[in-house]
Amino acid sequence: MGLKNFFENIFKKDEVKEEDIQKIDEEVIEDEEKLEEDILSSEIDEVSPEKIEESKNTDNNNSFKEILDVKEKNINIQEDFKESFKSDNETQDIQINSQDSIEDKQQLQEDENKEEVSETLENEGTVAVEQEKKGLFARLKEGLKKTSNSFTSKFDNLFKGYIKIDDELYEEIEEILITSDISFETTIKIVENLKSNIKKKNINDINLVKPELKEVVSELLRDNNSKLDVYDEQSIIIIVGVNGVGKTTTIGKLASKFKKEGKSVLLAAGDTFRAAAEEQLEIWSKRADVDIVRHKESGSDPSAVIFDAMQKAKSKNIDILICDTAGRLHNKVNLMNELGKIMRTVNKEYPDAKKEILLVIDATTGQNALNQVKTFNEAVNLTGVILTKLDGTAKGGVVLSIIDEYKIPIKFIGVGEKVDDLQEFDYNNFVEALFDNSKE
Image 1 (tube, rainbow, N blue to C red):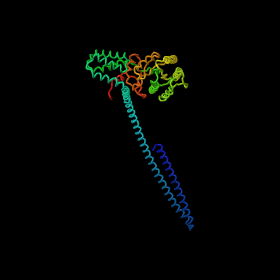
Image 2: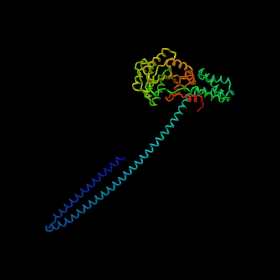
Image 3: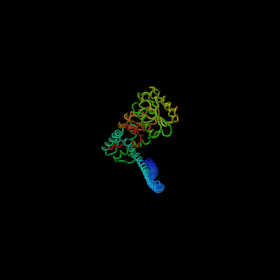
Image 4: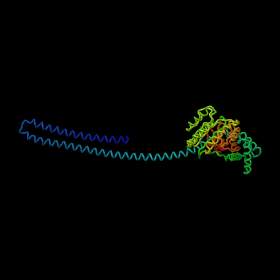
């Protein structure tokens, strides 16, 4: 029972007891009056007039005594009742104090529980971060399984068949690298660096060649800067690429990522050419809980859409504006020129914003991706590449050639369909996953 009900019952009990006292007083008075009437009636009924006075005096004395007895009885009853009421109040005070004590203990226990829960959540948060890191690598490893199995198993079989390190071994290594969708130029560089390191370290054991090859590949990727330059100031990201590489989906995943990081995000539906492209981007905007700028008229000028988006981003002080563009073949000059127009609009209307121009590439295209990088870079000066669908191909070796030949960093890689499967490129994790063909 709550404290409110508890006190209400006490006050109700007090009211009942007061009513009882009043009722007793009234009954006593009625008894006194009735007794007096009975006495008077008795006196009147007496036959002897001479005894009236004597009888009256005698009866009055007796009635007076009876009245005193009744009053004394009344007083005793009242005293007993008051004593009982006092005792009840003391009991209630004890109960109230006891209740207060219980509540204090409960509050103390609650405070202790809160501290314990807080410590538990803090510990769980630390564990969750570690598990998330392990989870990211596990998904990366799973996504690169096809590339890793093709890449590493070939080397394992190669080294099992040789007992010495010679030119024939190096030629076999070159062949494996080229068939793993690494360009000829990058392959030659890797093999030459491998030869140089083996010679410097005076390596003669065939079993040490693979670890050294891993070190050479890691060195090749070491200068890759995967960090986006969008975190300190208002920024704009332009997403470009050919048809069907997953640009819109990538934009949705980036929006979700930035939103989770506490950034305000705005999307611009600049792909006004492909049917339902704007509707698809709007669905992603709702999933990520971010705003979108789009024109209702089909076939609108993409530069006009992006212009309106920039005005809104500036007026609303948006942290990151992400712009979709129509897919275009890299060998279509007029469409590539349209990208140039978009960039001129951006540079003119949003000069102070940090800018990232990211090319989205489907990893399944293999070395054809290099042609896309070359053509788009000439048109808009790419700042980075996002490589999607790595989980569906064994052609992940193209990553090495993009970084080596064009010095354009890989910003993100897609290793699955989930939002978290678009991962920031970490060259250490990539190399570990590439050379790890364990079954776990």
